[in-house]
Length: 340
Image (tube, rainbow, N blue to C red):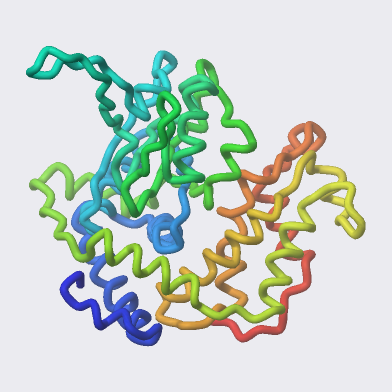
């Protein structure tokens, strides 16, 4: 892919490349990953849109393997950071050390931390204190880190995938809302159906997995980012995204009654931005050069589930955030756009 720069000259050619590339990506991923089609689609959508992802799922569901495999396909530098209670910010960003040169003079030398990669797996991010979690904020938003007053640019593309275990609460630190909002999607990984689980057990206990072949380069991913930005979106679809985010906010004019009863805090403007940007990326992955309403509706759950905070009343009634989002999709009028 990387030796054909002319293929990116028009959006139509880029759509064709992504359509063909999607099939090849699925074929390569199938060497290591069984099932999880929706999860793969959401991760690829975020990657091509330039967003970060929070991955929520129980241990043993191949979260690390999936992220590492995607990094291999796009020939990106993969870095894994295991978050623990004693992890310090410098363990992520890097630090300055005192070195002695051959002439006897001493000087400070910056040693890069594991944040200097393309695909960063922040494993069990909620197991480290807020001070260390905050070390990721600048990196995720500005694509740089500041150490001793000096800014260092990160490598591009830069993609953070943070995992958290929803089962164990003891010894964890909930992510602050400001940091949660930096993640484009909150992707849920659930247990596989029985047939897929049988295939995983058979595949992993009978032979060594086939090596995943790179299909793209980091430069290709950056070009895809540019193409995604240019995908046209109708005005009524943008308004639909804005209304979905707005309807999740309690106490506003026109807020649904169930939102006022069950929601403590709703989604901000960034949610609508990510809905539209993600819809553009999903359209290209589907081989289309325009967005349809189904692109937005398919991304509402992963975009809003970490931005909508349900109330104590909702928890007492057994209401989940996904149920609230489902009600939003039923309540907010859908534009009369043609489905995919």
